[in-house]
Length: 380
Image (cartoon, rainbow, N blue to C red; front, side, top):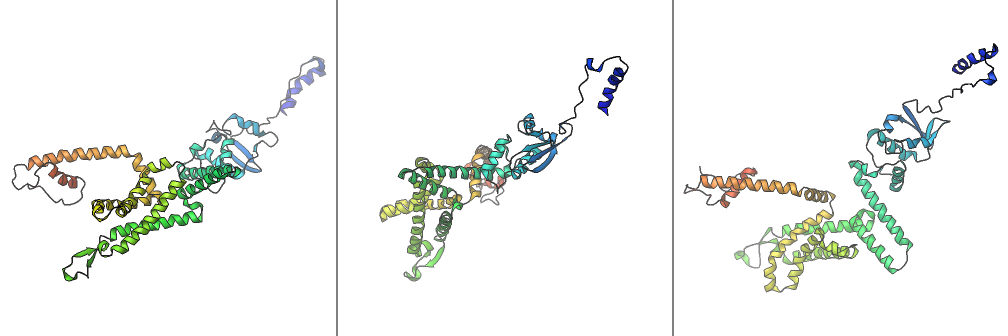
């Protein structure tokens, strides 16, 4: 009706001879709006036949992406009034959810390469993946990179490439034991021997009665001395496993010098060193190295290879080293100040136990940290 109203004045004028129709410039016929999406707050997106509906303001929250910028108009279908994308509709659910919530989540059961491809197409950076999914995304990304590296090695030939591929598979098995049955078995075997070694180290100090060979005049002996041969065999078996593990890790390490300088490598060496020192030295000299047996307690740190929680705790302490250092420094200042006060307050008392400022440290420490009743206390 709007178009007919625009033509009526010119039709009447031609009928009465005012202006010939052929000599007058007629106005352009009003065209209908062919972009219904622009006149509505809703946006219809068709992804390989599956329709998604959202608001334009939701997409414009992220103007640096494909759907949030004017580049999406290249995909607009005027006949259907929809934006059509020939992409994976299952992946698009997570893409659209990012526009709605501002948080990008990684679908654990989907292909990592396909997910990265969809992010690249829609102009979304993978760095904004939420903390709840970022660890899984990083692990899958690393596994995929290693798998691609293995595929590249498969394309080559020669003994060197085969050797490198075998070493990389070994290192991959050590770092991620869940990749295969053999790696998982070795993982649990080494974990079992670590536990046995720690328990034996503790158990050999427990009193096990008197030596029956010496009769009633013998002293109570610890289990480590009474059953010395049994504990020696047990310690030998554990050290053999730890030595084999260390040598295999050293062989498979991408950078052997860097591996030897790492903290876990030093712990492995320190854990097995007392055993070999005792074997190489004779009885007289080995007595000087008895104190090295204390280093066997470092075997408990080998559990950090088998526990993700312990590794996370170690990284947390490392990242908070400056804050923890400041806390220890503040505590040390308070201990010195209050120990000095306690010493001078009790200085003239003949029965005082605070004979010096260092002697008052223990009382100050257990009082400040609320550990309990100290061995020495103030007399006034």
